[in-house]
Length: 245
Image 1 (cartoon, rainbow, N blue to C red):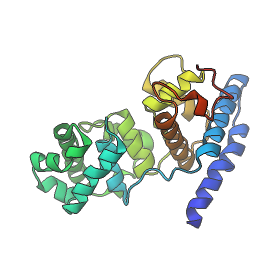
Image 2: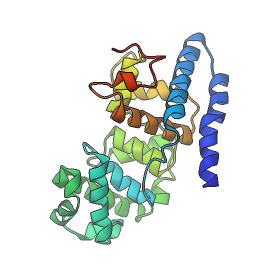
Image 3: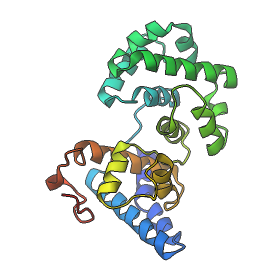
Image 4: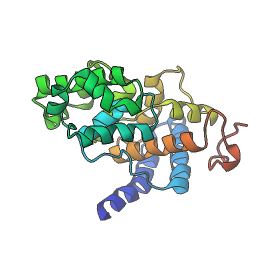
């Protein structure tokens, strides 16, 4: 518990110092301060999120695939089924059929497609890395990301979730909650695409995995609970920086 507290103290204090020190121009400084203020408001309101839930990096990876277009509560049910069957390892997942796996992960939705995606990942992990996540994660971020994106069913958001939450490497995950929230408070890139939104954070915050982890988790929580498609503005902790009505 002390180790976790230390990390959250860093998320609150050290990145703040680094952010103010990494300003190189008036424009970047303005965005730097906006992102810092947003983080502080969210953290003060919600506190640490302890995300991503998972007992191992491999479980985090499977969860990242299963959570595509799914509520986390349903993902938890699917992972529970796989665990109960004692199959949450790459060797066992390769040994069962797609239909058997699909039945286990049924609660997560799109179970046939997700079974193929999980199979593709564990096949790649076995053939390319002899089932060693340590070997897979030894690559630098760009190389690791390109490798993950080459695997069937893994797109940018899933790849970045694996890199940040399973490998513990600093990359910012972008999702629909983040895009919606940023747009409402008036922060948006020149082009409305994943890489441009990601660059807003990567170019203006210190490259620290614990900060990116906490920040993304806070954005997701606020997006789910308050900044919905029909937002609950009267309950929002961001009214001081958001003019959305």
